[in-house]
Image (cartoon, rainbow, N blue to C red; front, side, top):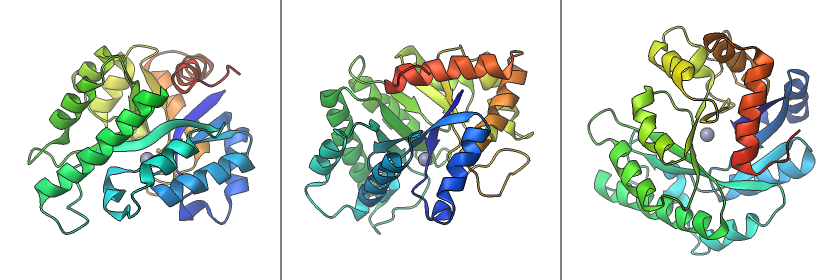
Amino acid sequence: MLIDTHAHLASQQFSGDLPEVVKNATEAGVTRIISIGTDLEDSQRNIEIAEQFDQVYATVGIHPTSVHEVESDDWLSDIREWTAHPKVLAIGEIGLDYFHPPRDGSSPAAWRELQIRFFRAQLDLATELKLPVIIHQRDKNGIHDCRNDLLEIISDYQGKIRAVFHCFIGPLEQAQPFLDQGHLVSFTGIATFSSAKELQQTTQDIKTGQFMLETDSPYLAPSPFRGKRCEPAYTRLTAEHIAKGRDISLEELARQTSATAEDFFGLPAM
Ligand SMILES: [Zn+2]
């Protein structure tokens, strides 16, 4: 029924009870989970998890806040090799994060440059392999927003790649340039927070076929579990909330968003 299109099942926070977490999801109607890689080790671990559970798929990639930890020169060929695995669906999460200070002690400008180098290299690979990409973006609120850099870079790949801007929280106008290029957004449990009025408006106004659902587990648990560990089963809570806002049934929203995810990730219809 529902698909959690963005979870981090390789997180330490699931190391003790992963089979139960996957079972909880199935019981809540979240029948497929896409577990997202953030660095080389994490990507490999996600593939192992996808091999372990029928309903779990994986993606591989280097997150912008992990780029400084990549030591080998072969990192891109490792990622290329892993994408050949039948359960690897996409490259991600990749992108730009200007929120966190430089993690390698470099200047903000050098840090941004390093992130952009990794981002473009992975977009080139996705173009070559015709794989969808999962994009992370986090801004520093005005000081040096990554939004413009992101739009400029993504526009270079127009018509070549398809991307999802995950954990979208802004007004619809902000997503529009990306949506107009055929990209998608996905919504997390933040959409259930009573304070997130602007985002709720976005989830009501956006066209069917332009968005998917996700949890970003173990982060961002929806209401009433805000602040607790999030798990893929909670996709249902976010779905219920968004369905209500769009004045459709949960089943209808599940059907629509699953069809969007199947198309984006190249998954068989279920
Ligand atoms: Zn994530």
